[in-house]
Amino acid sequence: MIEHMFDKLADAAVVDAMTAAARAQNADCARELAAIGELYARRAPADDAERFSWAVDGHENVVAEVAAALRISRGRARGRLRYAIALRERLPRVAEVFARGDIDFRLMAALVTRTELVDDDEVIAKIDAAV
Image (cartoon, rainbow, N blue to C red; front, side, top):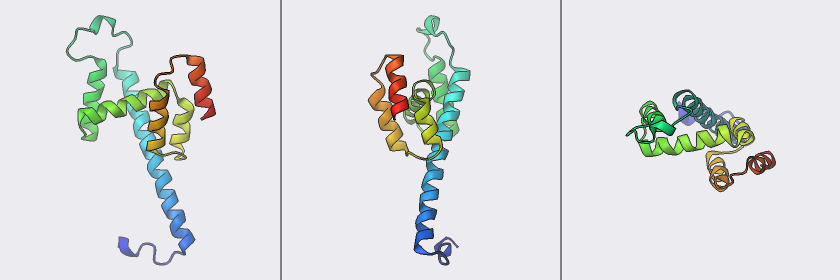
């Protein structure tokens, strides 16, 4: 039973189990976002210029598919897609650190949000490397 799973462990081992679980959770979240980014790369058309007047474009198709797959609202799916695209296209080194479980979702989200207005590829690469 779950209430007895740590009975034979020393305190330090319980802390280690907690740390390992948190790292695994972070890594799982990173894998989810990487999969969302891959789906976007496969589904979203490279040239949406002629599709601007469509009611549903490639981006929204991916949002709907993510929402259905994860059983979440389209708003939450849109947010996850935003993070997935940023990690894939702008912050690949942050994505690597997240995939190892070294940072959590909140820190990753803060990094994405705080770098969104940087539109210089060279500067964003330096920020990504520094972080």
